[in-house]
Image (cartoon, rainbow, N blue to C red; front, side, top):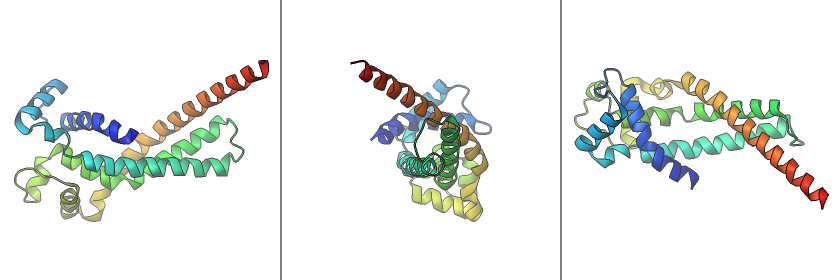
Amino acid sequence: MATLLHDAVMNPAEVVKQRLQMYNSQHRSALSCISTVWRTEGLGAFYRSYTTQLTMNIPFQSIHFITYEFLQEQVNPRRDYNPQSHIISGGLAGALAAAATTPLDVCKTLLNTQENMALSLANISGRLSGMANAFRTVYQLNGLAGYFKGIQARVIYQMPSTAISWSVYEFFKYVLTKHQLENRTLF
């Protein structure tokens, strides 16, 4: 449920970010991008890749959590507060999840940006819609390698992010649990 709600809010933000990042973007600010997209393409443009986003984020989170838990069992079987194990497990879990879901991210980016050069090379006129069409277009343009464009950047981005997230989560879990245990012994 958290992923559904998160993506409903963040998908439009991702569309704006990606369109601003495109080479030769016609947009000079986030507000200009929102206004232009709304006026020329409508609300649907902000959610064109929503199902792709969900299709990417649900497996990402599943792989991420399962891998973190598995790694914690291997490096910290007693589940002690151990910042090093949390950082290592969190970073590796994020890296694996990012690598595994890169093909979905590539398709999502194509859906969000509607990149004109890619569409014209694939002989697509108008708008590209749907994950299946995005998968076909990526394969048509770049073969299997096309699904893994940017994999290094995704992994490098996710590793520290998930390492920090897990270490902060485990720190506060430790502090709050320790505080609760101390309060129980007082009474």
